[in-house]
Structures are given as C-alpha cells and as structure tokens.
Amino acid sequence: MRNYGRYKHKQLANTLRNYDQLNKELLRPEEAPILQEYRKSLEQPDSCFYRQLGGWMLTEAALTQTNLPDSERHSPLDQAEEDWLIAKDMQLKKDKHKKSYRHFLPSTNMLRLDYNLASLEIFRSMVNKDITTEHRLNYYKSLLGLGIKASEAVQFFEQDMPYKQTEPGSENYIGIAHEINASLAINRLGSPTLMSFPALPRADSGHYRPADTHDLQLFKMHWGSIENVLAAEVKTTLQDRHYRRYKAVLIGGALHLHPQNRRTPVTLTELLAKEANGIASTQDINHPNSITDNVVHVARHGFTKTPQCRDIATCTSIPQTRK
Image 1 (cartoon, rainbow, N blue to C red):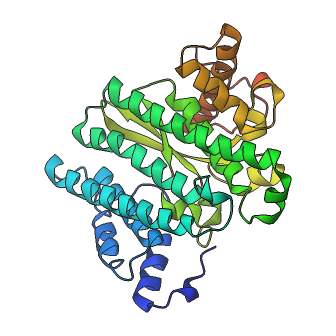
Image 2 (image 1 turned 30 degrees about the vertical axis):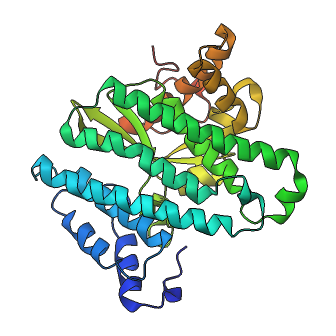
C-alpha cells in the first residue's frame, strides 16, 4: 500500500491519491484529460518514480483519447518516452551507488522501465491503427531480451544463497520473471488480436480496491483498435486465497508457466531463447506451445466471463488448446 503521508508536498500527495482512486483499468476517452493534468503536477521534485509514473499517465491518455486526431495522440507518447528515458538514467545512477549485486545485474525497476519502453512501438502503432507483423516481432524480441535478463538474475540468486538471504527484494526478480514469461507466452503468437502489456501503475497499488490489483493487461484488438482489456494477476504459486481475493484472471507460475514440472521461470526463458535462435528441438517447442495454450485458456475464461477453472486438463467450459 502507498503511504501518502510520506510525500512532503501536499499537492503531490493529493495527485497520487487521486490517481490511485481511479479505475485500475484504462479510462474512458472523456475521463482521460485528467491524466495529463496529473502529469503536470509531477514536475517538481524530479525523480525516477515520478518520471515512470508520469510516462504512464501520458501513455494512457494517448491510448484512450480516441476522440482526438492521431497527431495529437502521438505527442503524449513522445513525452512518455522522454520521461522513461530520463527515469532510466536516474535509475542507472542510483543502481551504480548500490554496493551489492546491482553492479552487474539490472535492478527490477530498470527491467520495468525497459518493459515500458519496449511497449511504446506497439502503442504508437495502435494510435495509427496499423500494428504490423514487424512491430509485433520487435516487441516480442525486446520482451525476450528482458526475460533473459530477469532469468539471469534468478539464476544468480538460486546459485548464490548468501546474496539471496542478505539482499532485500531479491525475490522480486522471480516475480518479474514470471510476469514477463506470461507476456511472452501470449506475444510469441504474434497475434494481431491478442497482446499482453504491463499493467498501469495504479493497478499495483492495493490502497484502494485491492481486489482490482493486477500485473498485466491483455488487449483484445480489432483492426488495430482496443476492443477489450482483461486484467491478469501473476503469482508464483496460486493458493485458494488468491481466487477469493482477485477479480483479475490468475496466472500461476507453478501451475501455468513451468515446463517439465520445473519450478523456476528460467526453464521457459531458455526454451524460448532456443526457439528464437532456431536451435530448438521439436520437444523443446512443445513445452512453450503447451504453456501458451495454458495462458490463452486462462484469458478466454476472462474474456468470456466464465468462472476460471483450477485444472485446465478437466475444464469443459473452455477449449484446452488454441486449436
């Protein structure tokens, strides 16, 4: 939960509170102008957090204000890119001062900034209503590169227990690795009608409407336009309490994303890298195909508003595979 009392500037605290109180999914076109007003109030003090948040405010405004000319919607995306690049520079300087593993591993915040930037090419294409095969492939390649970086960090902590025990937040690498893998499972399809992106920043805050929090937003597209958005929450291990708490569809690392019954996100990333490099065997490709089937199955439950099953193998309401 966000502690608004820790913000020294009252205006900033009010802006963050108002932003968090908004619907956690994309706003309607008539609601979106407030996002650009919120972004203006984040001008001072400058920080990585405000730049990252401000970039998302501008991106959401561009995606949702479909009533404006395309030229007017591109400008906020350009400003969002500038915000995220400046945030990356700030985060890099911050990470270099850490006397820890971050000397040679990207921080999870840096991975998230790169995740945001990787999405921008597709978001620009959405404004143009022309999401080409090349755009989708470039996005997937960028995501795979981030997945490899996250998996390398997970491997480091798996092999070096002293770091895992002493470094705060080291477990966050497993979380973001699973999130990226879930996105990869969908985006490897190269589908023009179903794509996965990181959730909005306010979707991560449980201060208001905690049941609505989620990690990913799945876009159902129609001729380059967003037709529907599905919230997805990714958990390393799904438990009964998660099904009771979240309104979003649930993707489990252990349940949906692990090939060969291995309980680490590294295995899937390695298989996807082999596939991308053209060195995967038929057996290697079968595992990612099965995982893509799992995640698409979960998404279909959400889009059709049927109660999510807990065992895909016995589900009768949604096809078990994409075929």
